[in-house]
Image 1 (cartoon, rainbow, N blue to C red):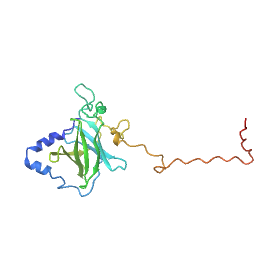
Image 2 (tube, one colour; image 1 turned 60 degrees about the vertical axis):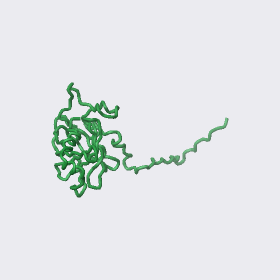
Image 3 (cartoon, one colour; image 1 turned 90 degrees about the horizontal axis):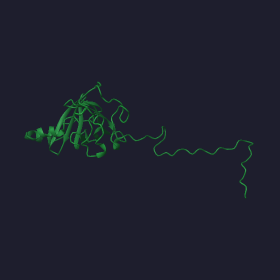
Image 4 (cartoon, rainbow, N blue to C red; image 1 turned 90 degrees about the vertical axis):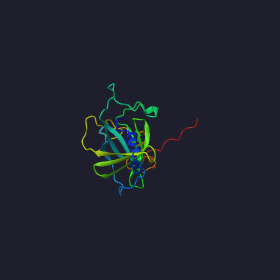
Amino acid sequence: MTYRSFTDVAGRLVAPLAGLVLAALPGLAHAATLNDPSGTWLTEDGRARIRLEKCGPQLNNLCGYVVWLKVPLNDQGQPRIDFKNPDTKKQARPSLGHQLVMGLKPNADARYAGKIYNADEGKFYDVTIWTEQPTELSVRGCMLAILCGSQTWNKVSDVAPGQLTAQTNTPGGPRADAEWAAKPTAAAGAAPGTKPAVKPATKPAAGAAPAAAPTEE
């Protein structure tokens, strides 16, 4: 993954004591209402675009995917892959299109909180995401309760060369992890748990001879 590691940001906050104190007091200033951060955002270092969208059974969670990379190829000229992923089954997946925001949930501070995956290290970190301005997204990641770093991502509306634009889990779109992939929906018009209607038996036409009874041998 090519976006800046949260550990790098946090490291620069360790030295100034004042920075640590502020980082240890989340929620001093927060949005009064839960704003929807769905959209495509350019990371602070400009190396990746992340698409955020609602997910989960009731669309109450927030998921995010890498839909563009400034440097999509490695030193060998091959597409970058998630080779540091702790799940060996995912180590060969392309970095472009993978899920990194893992179904965040709204919290009491009117923000989305949960886990974010950092492919640079193959690790998960606590993250809080919220927006108070239509074009800016605040992203706060923490290694520990007091070692946190913040970034500001900017919303983009254009399409960069190589950017994935199709719907999630469709050709040309990003890929959701299995636990966040949309489940197949029931047939149109059928209520959840409804069994298919039983087709009534066809009555014989008027005047038709009744079916013959089986003969005994």
